[in-house]
Amino acid sequence: MLIAHRTAYLLSHRLCQIYRINPTSNMSLDSDKEAQIRHQRESELKRKAYRDMKEETRKVLKHARIETPTPEPDAVGLPRKRFYRQRAHSNPFSDHRLDYPQEPSCMEWQKLYPHYFDETTGTMSKNVEIADIGCGYGGLLIQLATAFPEKLSLGMEIRVQVTQYVEDRIIALREQNKDAEQYQNVAVLRGNAMKFTPNFFFKGQLSKMFFCFPDPHFKQRKHKARIITSTLLSEYAYVLREGGIIYTITDVEDLHKWMAKHLEEHPLFERKSVEWEKNDKCVQLMMNSTEEGQKVERNKGSKYVACFERLPTPEDCD
Image (tube, rainbow, N blue to C red; front, side):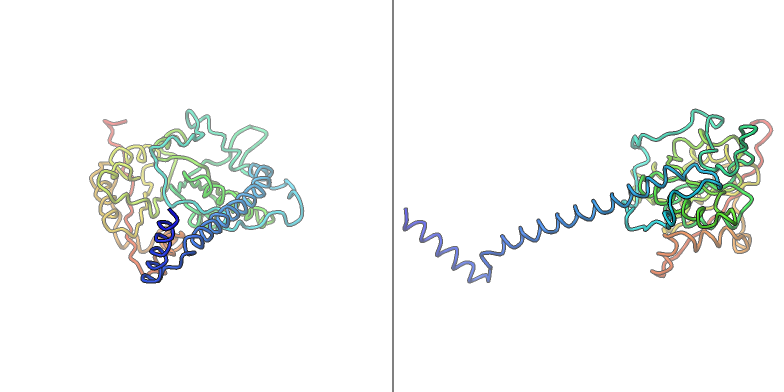
């Protein structure tokens, strides 16, 4: 028995010499793996602690009016994106346990835009007119706040941590610009536009809808999950007023052709000219404001734009 063990050991040692294998390499790999796992756990705990700290401020200021004092001096700062990172895409068909109103009249907009809520009458002085569908980290949404100071803009985002980042970003900007009363006209909510758009908006309420760098869903069996389809366009046409504009931009040519094709085939949309797109300030904003757009710019990629106007509803369809 001892001879057999000795022979096996010598054979193993010889093989290690032949293939230059360190007998302790497996132990080293295990140790490195454990250290990596430990580092990942510590990083996640740090990110969670940061988000929890921001959540306390968010609870106080998310629905606050301008006159509400800051919880403590310098308590509100712009959030750091690295603490809110989340995978790029989310399955729109999953049950995300989202909150949504039964109908538009049940939506409590005063919680998102407290500055525009008249406490005397109990009504909003303005309605949301601009929607950024899948707003991501809010690059375009923040630009819309100053580009259209008299209009209310809403970002809809399905990912939890990304939505929290945009909320914290808006809260910080509102606090930093209290005297000028800026950024009171933008807000974000976690929602699934593919399922619940008509639950939030009345017929003809919106003047602009943005679809910036949506998930391309490359596989053909996944095309049904694209944000632009014939069925969904009918819902968008319902909430978009006559003369309203749908803006689309992507860096994927196949997706651009798909969206343009479906919009061109829909009877309630007509494509705007290239000249119109060159002169429209919203096109310039979505080309350069979003994080995805900036990434494409850095990588010297292409951006494909298509804008469509909502046509009048035929009389026999009223």
